[in-house]
Length: 327
Image 1 (tube, rainbow, N blue to C red):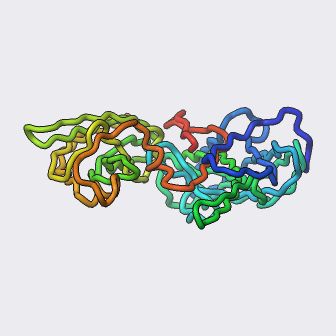
Image 2 (cartoon, rainbow, N blue to C red; image 1 turned 45 degrees about the horizontal axis):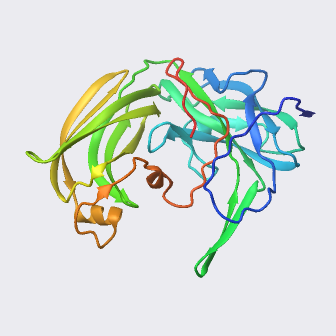
Image 3 (cartoon, one colour; image 1 turned 90 degrees about the vertical axis):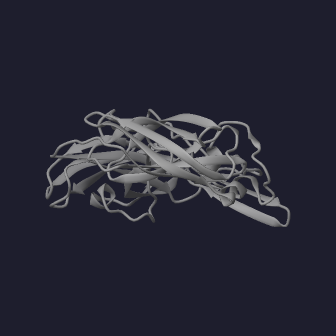
């Protein structure tokens, strides 16, 4: 049942700045909990049972268009914070439990529709918090870009994928625990990076902080603190920490890594090897000496190229009230 919405919600769209922008084609869509102002779903149930709810899909654009709906799992992004998969991403958790009553809608400007859905919880699943989401993906790109670089031309279509989180709480102890799994080095586009392996083997969404100290004995010593946003249970990342100042030359070092969360603190002392290959990855094949590094941004490492990041609602979940940040 389609209705016209008087209060238009804003769909936030983030994309790379590319040349030669064309006019918009299709509308963006937004998602909200039906009959509630809560920013995300928090559902409690038992293994082997089914939960029911509904989501409202809104055309916040100025033209008519179609939208595809699907469930997805939540995981931890490379720099922490909850992120969500696409339609092609394999689903093994909440995304696989979500059964939508409709998977495709056609909506005019300002129109909205209510879509009931069920969360079918498998028997024998672990207790604690599970995170997934519902995605609204426009059938048509909302914008397209094109250009020519040298003898190569390119064409990019932008779709605004809106996501609303679905947190499912199951009976069982809520354990918050971040552990350190290793450390290595890499680099890209003139930036030397240390990759700190961190995992959440617990059952609760958690946040934390940490620091890495690298020394080569009597010589140089650096210390870089970092903050960890929402970390999804049963996930692992290689958190990138940028080396500032002058790059560490090839050689063997000692790394002291500390990570703290609601479940306590862990410190590990590990060997770290900076290879010539990692330096060439960062500074090119003509690298000869540790160059100075300017700036603190690691955005090129995260983006890596022409990646279009599109955000819908800013949502989140906390352990027992923690809000998973959407990326």
